[in-house]
Image (tube, rainbow, N blue to C red; front, side):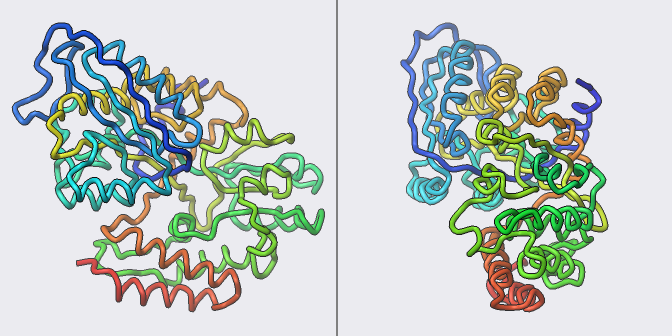
Length: 439
């Protein structure tokens, strides 16, 4: 283990987004006996409790990130929290990602939002601008990574706390590389190196492919940055989707499908997901998040490892994080802030998260972060931290989802051969300009 890697995390962490699916689960514990009372908040009523004790209170916490496999992990965190704050009972509701934001919009609009909840970046900006989030300036943020914390600060007001972080790496099947006689990827690979290796792996069999990288907005904005492009100009007043740099990035992504076919098209996928394709041993490389590690560890019967994602003219890697927020209308802000602060930044919660392989905490404690490197596979865990040298954040605007949907749709049309890559970007540019007001 190297503390320098953890120091790298501390110096470079920024904001991104993450998501997963699952089944709704609710958890509720019995209310304990109250002990002594301490002042829990500053005069604004938004601070966090300094010590356990005080009046008994039950708060509602809603999240999506635990769905699909980490419900028990979140429950273990709550049990540890409840030992320290026995006066605070947390009613935890875990909702599948696909249903979560529709439900949350309805609850916020109807005045029935939970006391505290989780938001991804697409929705955080919109919620913060609408005044439905409480000011968390009184929270104890001493153990948070400062850069990650600042990502949820809007014009000097702290509206959210970074609950976790994940990033994207290149994961590769060592057995397929061996069969193709290709050297394993390294952290300094470019997309040209990937293409060369992918073509050799593709030649192994008609149903084996060299690479899979999603043709979505989240992938495109990052690859565009790798070629020096961006989706908006510097002051975010104009779209630049159809720039020459972006065209080069999109052409490279689409050519892998329609030209060299080192990446399968929709028909060749035959309904399989990208993870399914990798787990079946039919693709040499896949760009995906570090949250795949536990699944691949159990599902893959071949050797695999990771490296920093390749680049174009430069490196740029994706970074995800979710915000933990407090309802501005809650009458239990102090307890809610105490809970989300502990959940996001305590060493105890961080250790439980790391032991479970559930994302990483956005904290300062180097010893806890170093423990992450000991959990294998993959063997090259250092690549997770090395990737933080090249982080790029999605272009966040209030109509993020609309912009994302337009770009993803046009990329899909290009990948299916319906339109050219240039037409795809031109149409995405025109539709975003006509549908989204950046002023």
